[in-house]
Amino acid sequence: MNTHEFPLVVRAPSEGASLPDFLAGRKERMEADLAEYGAVLYRGFAPMTGEALDRLVGSLSSVSFKNDEESSPRNHVVGNVYTSTNYRSEMEIFPHNENSYKKEFPMKLFFYCVHPGAEGGETPIADCRRVLKRLGDGIKAKFQQKKWMYVRNFTAGIGVSWQEAFNTTRREDVEAYCRDQDIRFAWHDEDSLKTWQVREPLLSHPASGEPSWFNHATFFNIQTLDKDLRESLCDMFGDDALPHNTYYGDGSPIEPAVIGELQQAYLAESVPIKWETGDLMVLDNLLTAHARKPFKGERRIYLAQTDPVDRATLVPTEA
Image (cartoon, rainbow, N blue to C red; front, side, top):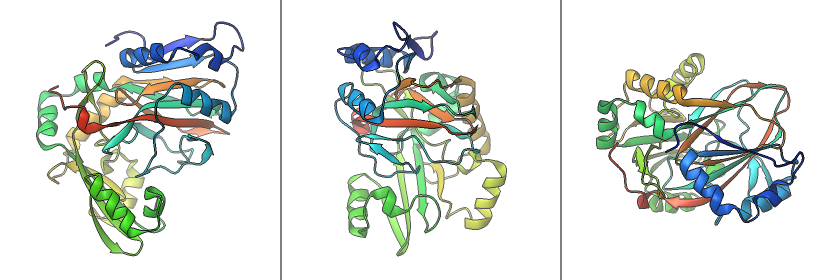
């Protein structure tokens, strides 16, 4: 594990150089850098269209990632390229690994800056190997013993609907998907669905075998939300029907002190990336969490997710 540079910054060999030309034939080098550093930022290259980005991502990946169970609204740009999130600009997004609650998740994330915004909008990133090292032995042992549970309530008019999340209007399709993905579910009415799934909190990297703290236990926990929003949601839905929440794998609540320690571990390891037009940042999703600072003005960041891996092939490792 690299203990110095994070992320690895690769600058254009000349002003306005073509990034696709520069990266031609360098897929293996990029993957080796990702496994060591967790994040690579390509900077100073000529801007690309969405179509050019989609072609570049395809050349640096093996398989695109089909994102069911979507938790953040996005707009489709072209091919496998989407907007990173449509979450409100004044809200901060806490560090997380994309789709860590899924049975299958993307190993590579490609973030591309079309426009950085007038103010704010940085993307903090955190090495989850280092996050893990900050956690007390008791916390790690308890999570490894109990695992963690993600509970989600799809309610009409609140967030992403179940139809959007599962890309279908057929309840039987949702049920088949949930059974295949080890997700329990319960329908409350035509537009209300509750799902819950239990996952391992640690996974080992397929290249290095290094353990990484890979989960949404902190991100989706109600205690991580802004105080006013947290109180509003609890008043509106109660503890059992919140849009998102997390627990230990046996359904017991995660103690506030534990959530506090987890939050501090992520924040202590976060490195804010201030975007420049034309930046391409590639993340090893298993090793690196990402976040977003509030912003003003136009900010446009594209995202492509690729190279899905089945978490069952990444044997949980003792921390």
